[in-house]
Amino acid sequence: MTTHAAGGGRTTLTVLGSIVAFLITVAPVQAQQRVLPDLKVGSRVRLQARQHPTPRIGDLERVDSLRDRFTIRDSTGLRTFETSAVLWLDVSAGIRTTGEGAGRGAINGLKVGAVLGGILIAGALYQDARCDTCKIASTPFAVLASLPVMAVTSLLGAVIGSAAPGERWDRIMPR
Image (cartoon, rainbow, N blue to C red; front, side):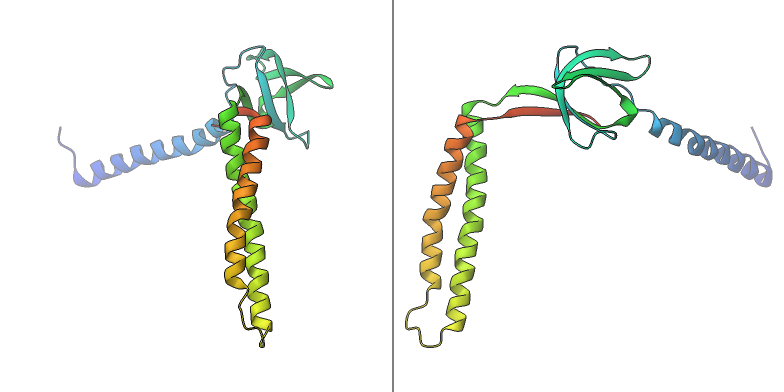
């Protein structure tokens, strides 16, 4: 098929313009729709909704896909949430194993020990900067002292983590 250069160019631009206009009008509608995820009744869920300042944890009682809402039973009773009002939703993946809890606790304990060691070293650096008559600098001792502090806090964190491993949560909304 043969077209004139000017007419063919205008037709192509018209078609492209129509496609762009369609996408611009459809995209916001698609972005506003929140599809209710596949939730199983009886699942333990944790969510944050706009109308509640604190996260809610409870068991899923009902899922109403037609109205795009669901109901959970928490410590205060039944609560129904519109999907559009939910900021995030997690489903419980079960309790962590003792080893997972110990590993997580050890890492957190190491972080605490590193902060405490850093404070100890900063204090020693400050002391060394202020003391002109000191014959021995205290900073190397502070560095050496911070290592057992990190080891002890890491060990303590591992013990606490294995005793109370916590619950794992899988984020399902928003994805």
